Length: 622
Ligand SMILES: [Zn+2]
Image 1 (cartoon, rainbow, N blue to C red):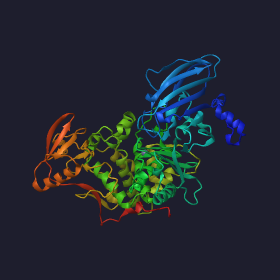
Image 2 (image 1 turned 180 degrees about the vertical axis):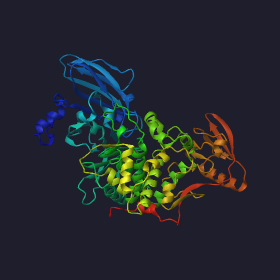
Image 3 (image 1 turned 90 degrees about the vertical axis):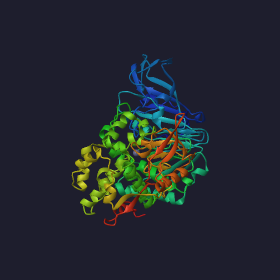
Image 4 (image 1 turned 135 degrees about the vertical axis):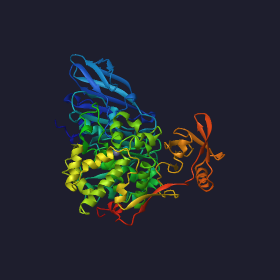
């Protein structure tokens, strides 16, 4: 049904609607009010008015969250849950097989169920005293039985006094700190987060001549952190232009990069169709490496608007948030995005060609000598299993080299680079990965639209660009248990991975101090062992993930002293002696390693044309 445009209504009526958020619920829409005014205490108050018929009702709290690929809805944060109907409190029970499902009985004569509950913000995740990120799936219940595209919500958000906000969600009206949004399907509501904060700034990054509005919305823990350099701002405009050129189409009405800058939120990005929820440290934009930090995150999430939202694997395109997702095609959904994101970051100038190459060198090395888990676990399985592992499977518990939990990102990146170089070779430079993106992600802009695909659809689109046995190509990569570095794309592009004793120049060394390719240890600043390469020199000497290096050759540990010891052992041939703490017990590990320091870099292979750099040159002519 069509809804009145609240902006067109006289102020008196508008006020009534805003004061009484449940007034429209009789029409069949669900009225939802999220009160974030008490954000400082990390508690959101929710009220919901759900039209119902008398009898048994089942309500779901969103479980399978799009973009997270697992059943990791925040159910444990739901507290203070109460229901009323017809003036009476209605008891509820939770499903014995599914913690996200609630059952109730609505009494005769009642047509509306009023729900109220609180959501406790997980510590250090989405809120600080000065800002919050609202992902709507955390703050609503919805009735079982209808697809989420056919359930309509009328959302209202209350923010602390004086705060401002950014979102792709169409706004119906604002009164002081209360924002009412236009009626929207549950599917799009969950896809349209809001950032709000005391310190907020919106920057128009629409390229000249581009009809769709593009905006960078910033919230931060301080006013100072909202400053962005003219170079990074210009690169963000370039990014929008380059993405338009790469895909040849857009599938959104307008687009908002929602960037949260805080040291007290979780740092990650979550894609949405018309926005992305990205989170970086508070002073990220003030750092000399701001372009690289932005370039490694925002282009990836932006690419998802095409690859993940518009085009989505059919078995990930579920009708609601209760039906399980299947993640077997994440090597396209995430792998291709992980390739195209940094490529666009380099095309738009957020990162330099050298930074881009160092990132690829680091990725290739990590998947070669840094990844013994590739000998037992095919790439395909890393994608398939993540539905069962959830966010916890993304690698917070050490042993990354042996688990290889989410390699469909990084190894997918290199596999799609190889696809790009094969297209170039097969067509003698007449076609490129851009042609594939035009075919696979192009078409008319009908706003946010979903076009599901299968493995065969990917193969068919590639065959339209360059006929080849793409199915066999993918299966060879996806089912392999070879330990060889997946560097064919780099080599086709005219570059080789080589190891030298020179640390990478890039300030964004991805995982901190690294001796992965010498003694086989990934260490934190304090010597804690993030990872110990299974079968590597340190592992053979008894060191594993979770221990802590306390001393080096009789002296208190710091990373420079360890680097000195690795160099000295190369000259002397003597073992490196590390004092290691295992829980509360010390032991001495004597590491037999004489190879000196080793860091991966890309070296130009002059026997081949440099296609790698060609791929990351600016294409949009800005
Ligand atoms: Zn992603």
